[in-house]
Length: 253
Length: 152
Image (cartoon, rainbow over all chains, first blue to last red; front, top):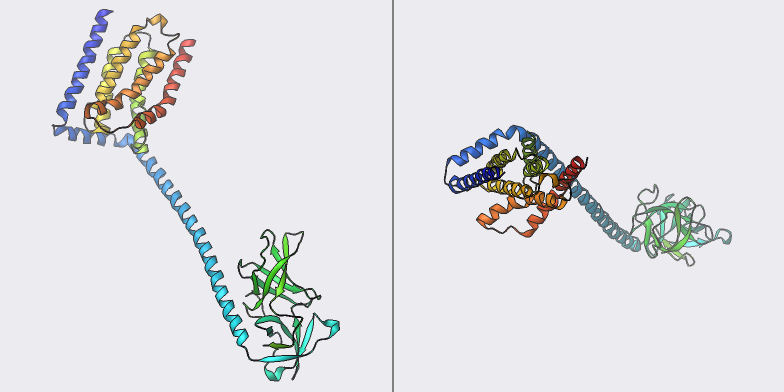
């Protein structure tokens, strides 16, 4: 037993001394580098799958990271783009409003029948003054209605409070599209806005680009509150028209 | 043959991780387990020289300077042989769990310490903690194998 232990010690100490010797002399030997290179070359084949797997993993991680970065960048750019679009539309609308205010073609309201008080008015300008069917009519730069009937010297204007009045419109701050419609009782409503946007009060509403007859960006008014929710997930908002429809004496076009 | 396979696995994992992770010393762990597991004392001498060769090859592959892991592995095997040899063979299968754990743990702790002890350096305690954490599952697996084999 003791001799076995002694042999173990001899072998162990020999291995240790050899290790220390290698450590001491190998740094000064030029052959060490050659052996290291040779050993690395020999291990190239068994290590190849690991190196390949590592490259695949690193490629995948890099691709995944790039994809996440790009996705974040797209989201950021989309938000930035939406902000810029909003700013641009605000500027455009302000310019349109200014142009509308400067419009010198004015007309006088010469008939507003009590039976159709919130539906239509007649003005003293007609086709000889350049009015056409569907043209927008303004008061103080805000949409009052559109020409629904034209004769030589007078025209009928369908008011935005008319129950048959429906035009596409956009909320300028959120760029949500909806339909502006009258109810025939003096109210103007913005319909078909997806629910969940909250109150939106004070936001400006103008005609949308998808309108066929009216140019986009014509100011209509501001949202004054919610009118209700429909069962199919849409909210209807009340609009406070920019034009004072109870005191329409003169209009412009 | 088994320890050559472990050496290659250790090398494979090191290549895969690019040397960035603390890879458990599977080769020396397997060798220590083999000494503990083997009830006869016949293979101890070969274990010393297997450790020497494995450490030398590891140094040549990953350190570039032979000696560090060579010494570390031989020291581990000497400690294990001496400590395990103190326990009578008939008592090795019961109540030795903590000793086996310490011996296996030494196999993971000593080799990385050797270069620090010889050269000095700034290797912090985090290095050893992370090394032990990575090695812990392998150590537990060895203990499980031992208990399963020797309880029967």
